[in-house]
Amino acid sequence: MKKMTFNKGVMFAFVASLFSTICFSVLSGVLDSDLLMKSISSVVIFVYLVYLMQCSNIRTGRPTIILIWSILSVVLVYLVDSFVLFLMLQILLIWLVRSLFYYSGAITSLIDLCLTVFSFFVAIWAIAHTDSLFASVWSFFLFQATFVFIPENFKADRKTATGQINEFERSFYQTQVAIKQLSMVRR
Image (cartoon, rainbow, N blue to C red; front, side, top):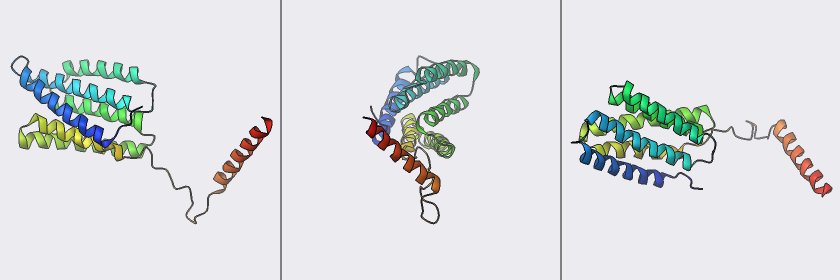
């Protein structure tokens, strides 16, 4: 199984930026710019979500996530007039998928939400200052690639403040050792 890494995220950022720029350049005369941007962003985000799920250890729920994303995307295309609002809702789906598939704690999920919001603002800043779709998509996914540095969960240190392992953990360990010894005797 493939594991998500920062380098893979950077490669995805480059490919997504290139794809978005080429599609926009080729199709800008054919389709309305709002519909075109919604379509391109939906395709790129869909591919990113599938890629995130492929690199995750969790196997259950993938078809459900794809179905929910598909329904929401179609509904959002028709109900949401603002491209920025449409994009924000799509980006929240990225955060939701990462929270479900990569994190087991609320704190790490909230850190990822902050990263996602920051990535969105960086992409807005990039498009405002460069007028480049490539730079905007690149900036967004480049910052998204850093999610691999967020731990799955912040676990408390196994030792207490005095440096001693607490009684429960000691008892739990002794029980495990006893069960292993009993299972070896019966063989």
